[in-house]
Length: 223
Ligand code: C5P
View 1 (cartoon, helix red, strand yellow):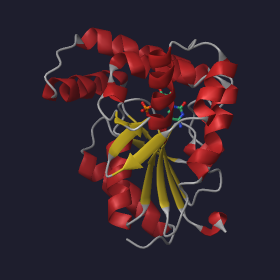
View 2 (view 1 turned 180 degrees about the vertical axis):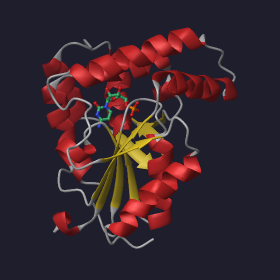
View 3 (view 1 turned 60 degrees about the vertical axis):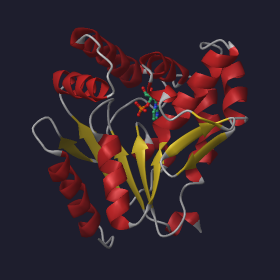
View 4 (view 1 turned 135 degrees about the vertical axis):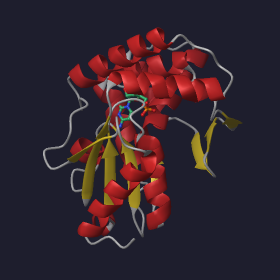
């Protein structure tokens, strides 16, 4: 009865902090964690590596169905290779958002995402967790922040990894991705009608985690 297993859905735009928040909430609750964006990134990486056409929905859906992906100990595997860092590349990020506009790709990844719903519960982060993948989620949160703040955060993250990227170009990429994710016909990036919006522009990660946990407790989830 997977429907009886509680889900905390954490949706929001790129670099809003939703991944970090969702992971920490999962740790506190003792739940499993799904980074659904990683699946789109894996399809994009596989497509780039195999020379598949990023704009061919049929070829990409086949690739998504056959994806040899592993999630273990916070590491991401593709065809037996550790690609945790490789999928964060800006080229893969941009390709992932293009791959994600195709309905057949999204359908191909649906069951793979729902399979993460196992006791005692799941915290899932993405764009359509509360709207499409887990519409019956117990708690739905939409995490957001201003585009400027998100560009600053991404800049800081990359700098920590020794990568120096122009902040204006990051801002441009973020705006482009927001526009594509928000305007696509299938599963656009919009808060579920019953989602609580958490704006993290002026919040610390800790405060945002506490805000989500408060909602989880109010919904009867132990924490
Ligand atoms: O969350 P993340 O930035 O890793 O996601 C990469 C891309 O995958 C996003 O730009 C978005 O287009 C897509 N995505 C999606 N639906 C999800 C998660 C991610 O369309 N549930």
